[in-house]
Length: 81
Image 1: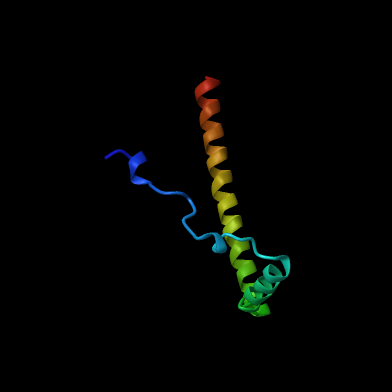
Image 2 (image 1 turned 60 degrees about the horizontal axis):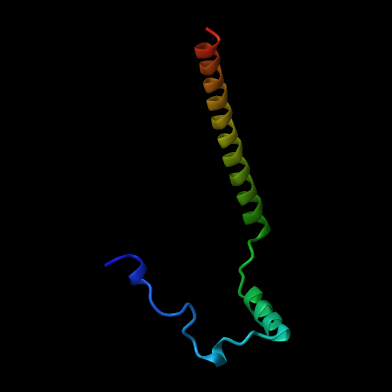
């Protein structure tokens, strides 16, 4: 069986009444309802997350910088020689 025959039917098999666009007020109400479900972090959690991200970024910068310096010196040793 070929890969092209594995996918059949139209992309949208829903009836016509389910394909209608949502009105702007309905969309806005749905967005507000979803935002009310969001659990926002406390200030303590936010500070903790900030420092965790900063430490991770600094460690990654150090690793990338060390690799860049090492590969740069290796390239100069190979091609300058």
